[in-house]
Image (cartoon, rainbow, N blue to C red; front, side):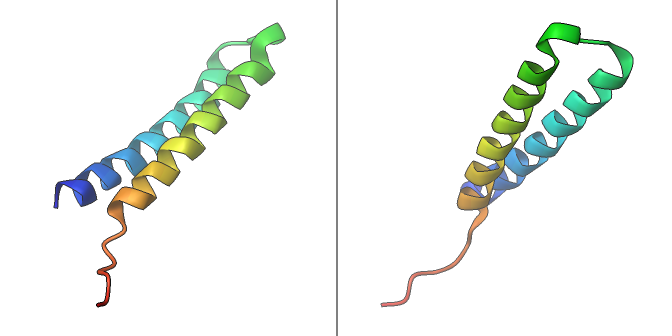
Amino acid sequence: MWKEKLGGYLIDVSKYVLTGVVIASFFKDFQDSKYTIYGVGVLFSIIVLIAGLILSNNKKERN
């Protein structure tokens, strides 16, 4: 049960990080490091999303 809750939490964190990167770009001009910030933000969001999906997968194994 805790794996499903942690998986849901990680999926939410992924959405918030991705949203934070987009919103931050509206308020501040990053100039030189713009693509680095986008790349790291998107990469981190994808990694956390995959971890969340793996943990929240509640498929039972058949014997």
